[in-house]
Length: 388
Image (tube, rainbow, N blue to C red):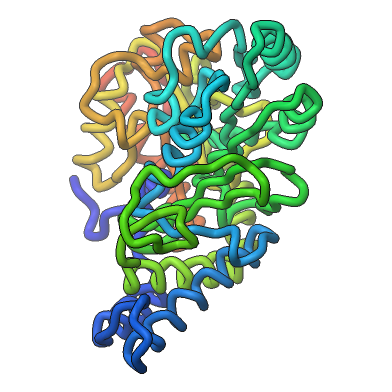
């Protein structure tokens, strides 16, 4: 039976819009003025855009002039990858766990032998070998490594990767979209050349992203026209969206301690599930993870069965990246971690965030145990869970 209130556990796909962002967006929509116009209305719009730019820059320790707003996270990821390759003599190296927004830019030859360990953390020795091989070929390596994986929540060693890449004269891009507002994101500590962000993962509006370009890093605007965003992305700025991004980011940073506190509730939920289903796996569970993500799987219980059963019970979660929903092929991320196709097709992701409560973790555990007991009773022992 569907509960009176649905429980949303798909924050990694998109987070609910924060009230602070909603108020800021509504206020901006009441304005008239192009940020590029010099009259009073234009200057007022420009002031709002620059205020949000300052917020984004300060959040990652950057200078405001190094931040360009984009039409979303996918554009913020793709722009530096396309731009750097335009300069020629560059070989793109990506990890096997990158989001499709990155992977779509890589050819088969770009992957080489770089791999990821069973815990979901990329292997730096294989990265170092790939970088060295690329240099021997007379090419400059451009490495793209995400800070937090969107499916497992595992935190990646970007700082260490940057040291390897820069020692070889290469460039490094970081997709920090799933990290912003959840862990510290510092371009000083990460030492990356490009960094991509998105608003709707932290409770901001859809269709707004931001790109950091390190001074001196090669970049050429792919979208040209009016020269907005310091010449990095032409087109009139989405004032309302940008303002909503800034407001959501301020709220996320203010509440980051509360987000981190979700880890204990996530861990308790996973412990309950493992107690009743001993073959259940927590993918990435032994590696450092962000607090609100749990990627679990149990062979013999297809992800579609789990998702549909939990949806009927009033829970919204997913089987991986929202950008890959509807595809029947197994997750690239999980198979890269060594899972079989069957195991990968039996995995789901629950992701919680700024509006989640401790009781929601307990409720999801209750619902999963009941769903699994009905769908595959041979796989679970409900009596093993004192709270079931």
